[in-house]
Length: 368
Ligand SMILES: NC(=O)c1ccc[n+]([C@@H]2O[C@H](COP(=O)([O-])OP(=O)(O)OC[C@H]3O[C@@H](n4cnc5c(N)ncnc54)[C@H](OP(=O)(O)O)[C@@H]3O)[C@@H](O)[C@H]2O)c1
Image (tube, rainbow, N blue to C red; front, side, top):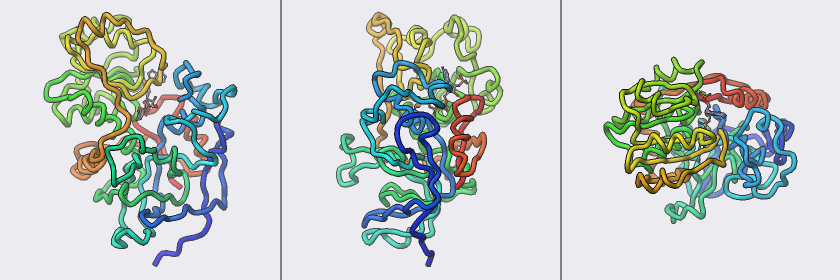
């Protein structure tokens, strides 16, 4: 029987703002375990942009810039605490960190005690499991619910997936947010065998996942990324790797893959390249989007949209079974993790500083 302490070390977010809003607490209460919950001893927790976007209040529609290095470090001082999170306001203090790998150490009365001792990943989309299709009730782990930048985290047992894998906790903590988002983008755009898929930001968490998940389903990923990361992205399986922002994207595609068009754009970047993304889509092409790191406000030529019968899909809340699919891909070795660096818990701000520089490929992980 494992003894659960009453307090733990945790990094808490105390409000919207710069990195100074992240505070290390040495004696923070271990989360309560409700009847349907499980308590996890956190082995590792991957970083993601939601942590930063929520901290700096980027989801507030008054913010018109992308997630820049400076904005990510200093925050947007003028914003208040309302509407700063992806789904509205959140309560502080909050433990962020969605991408948890760890071991179950306790369960609530309604949960099978056999789960104790299991190594697990957390499905980051918390929902009412009696009504799982109701997306109005969805919340995000580490955003509207305390997450994994701590020694312990609790989550509904229905969100907890035992995993059988030789990968380390840090490696397993790179998957959740990035890979479910990437898979959801491909599902929403009905990407299938032979589809040519353009992937802006292909060196990042979602982008590197998209490259691998495209290959997994027989599609052909074409990457856009920073020059220093091109070789690593090619090695993941990209058919071709183009610069982050070619002056003439169609001509760059023609030269690299022998055609000036793509069937799908799977985008988490947006910003100034958005207009060109629409120009290179084929008739009835599909634009699917889960982020706008280079800027949410874009120039949109409606003629590209209607004259080419384009199909647009947003991709945020996943279908209830998708996380289980992802666990299967990991267990069968169909996708691989990319750990760019690990940091101890007390260095979450340093981890975020490095994350914001965008010099890495894959993801950065905190190991409590
Ligand atoms: N809707 C959802 O559920 C969901 C889930 C996950 C992520 N997201 C969003 O998707 C976006 C990407 O997430 P991620 O985790 O893949 O991010 P990431 O790991 O930080 O990677 C993003 C990549 O975008 C590229 N990029 C291109 N233009 C950029 C610019 N102006 N500024 C910064 N980077 C730029 C960079 O690659 P190069 O330097 O190689 O070009 C960077 O590595 C974020 O905005 C995030 O909030 C949304």
